[in-house]
Length: 276
Image (cartoon, rainbow, N blue to C red; front, side):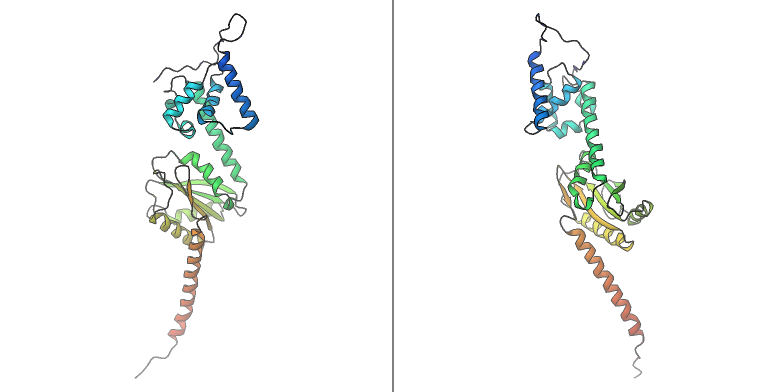
């Protein structure tokens, strides 16, 4: 592990006039903070955002170079936020205080996004569901299938992980999904899973699974509002592409066809047979 310099409690060496010797770094940091207060993160480069985060843990040290090194290693701001504390501390100049600050900010953001969507009609907010799920699913090395249970006001009641590994209709049980809906007294569901490859386009298996779950839950009068596939900074929404509505219409047509067929069977049974 690289040497970490992370001592916020260290005193500042002073020049003869009482001005900190690192006043240049201090002035730069002050300007960054003023820019943020005036316009949030608009116009900031990724390394400047990381620099601000690092300055919370090391307020008396120039954080520009460690921030640039972190972006270089983890490729993006997102990569830095997703890095583990151990990985962050391998960057020269990032110690336990700064690593803690970065992970705290990430978790606070995740909690905020979760709370933000709880009281909203999520059938109109697939992008907000994506924002929330992306923080917890984007770095996963295998597929994870989630079900979000909603009440009659389309507010999220709970979120459950039902399966991990290869996601298809053979290892996702419609019965388990329905039992979860009954247990939570849910009236609708949102399905979600990730594609570790980064490409959110649905496979044939993804489409078959979604169709089967729409059919199964429709029997119990529970709606699937959407199935969101999480990719690399993008997602695929079955509802947004009109597929949920298509599956619901397909199910309705099958149901009507079954009713029509059932009505014809007694009539046929009552026809006289040909005795010739």
